[in-house]
Structures are given as structure tokens and as C-alpha cells.
Image (cartoon, rainbow, N blue to C red):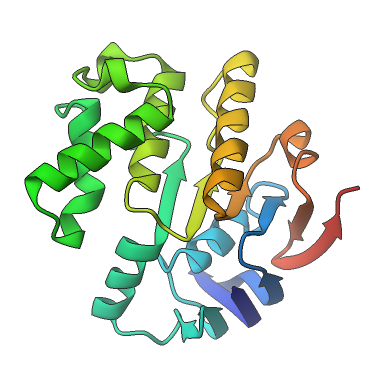
Length: 225
């Protein structure tokens, strides 16, 4: 479970201080699904970075399963990210010179698995997103939707508890967007993931059971019925 208390993040902009997050209190239950929505510059991606341990708050606590990500050592934080948190980004972030199989395997290297185990788990992950037959293809040989499926497989191959997605359908057409969201929702249910997604797309936001709207660094949570 995530428990955020008084989370503030300030940035310097010239002589001014800008509050990207202004005292956020938020609880996300294990297995929960939350969409974060709001205007550009409102703090959506900053909040997601806090949840993923990619940045630290100026003040407040970000507790995941009893550990405050804000105060962990860099070494411990790296371990938590490697073991427990999967990330999916708008731009896919695949390595262009590696095959789909090899891209997925990269997520397992920090876990110290043997090469044989990495290959087997990566193959299983690609199969789970419908890309078993594309394992040997480079990213440039895949469509945008297929590249995002590889990125999803890479995020889930380490069997994390948490999946964080930052505009995962932002580079996709409407039809492919819906296919990818159907896949993500299915995997969320199948694996019992805690799933948090940032999106500008109101149609996708309405599909989530909970919506966190963020404006000027402040969060309001509503339940979608």
C-alpha cells in the first residue's frame, strides 16, 4: 500500500520557487487502480516520479509497504525499484539495437538471474502481451503498439507489485490505444497489480475506478461510478 503524507516538491525557476506538489495526502491500496489527470505543468508526472522513487520530495513521506521512499538510501531505493516497481512510458524507451527479447531481459539483469532464466522469463512475458513471434525483431521493425507491448512486457517481467505508466498511449492512434489499455487492464487484474497511470485522455480516465485530479500541485480524488 502507498501512503503519501504532506508530499511537497519545490523547484527553482530563476529567482522564484515553484511548488509542483503542494502538500499531497494520498492512499493507494494494494491492487488498486488510480488514474492521475490534470493540466500540463500541474504536477502529474512529478507525483508519478515520487511513487516510483525516481525523485524525492522536498518535504513529506512516500511510504510503500512500510518503507519511506523519501528517506531510503540510494542503494536501497534502487533495489526497491528493481524488484517491486515496473515503469511504462509514452516514448517506449526501448534500446534500438536490442531485439524485443533482449529489451525485456534488461529488466532482469539487476536481479542477478542466470541467463537461461532471463531468457525464459522474457519469452513468457512477450507471450503474455501477444508478441512471442516478434521476440527476435528490433524496435524499428515493430509498430508503435507493438513497441509499447514490449515495454509493458519489460515492466512486468520482474513480477513487480506496482505498475506505473506515464501517458502509455500518448503516441498511439485511437484503435491501438484501446487495445493497449485493454491489455493493461487485463494484466492488472490477472497479476493483482497496484496500477497508477498518468493520462491527458478523459476517455481513459473514465475507465479507472479512482481518479486523482491534480491542479497547481494539489490533489482531489474522486470515485468513478
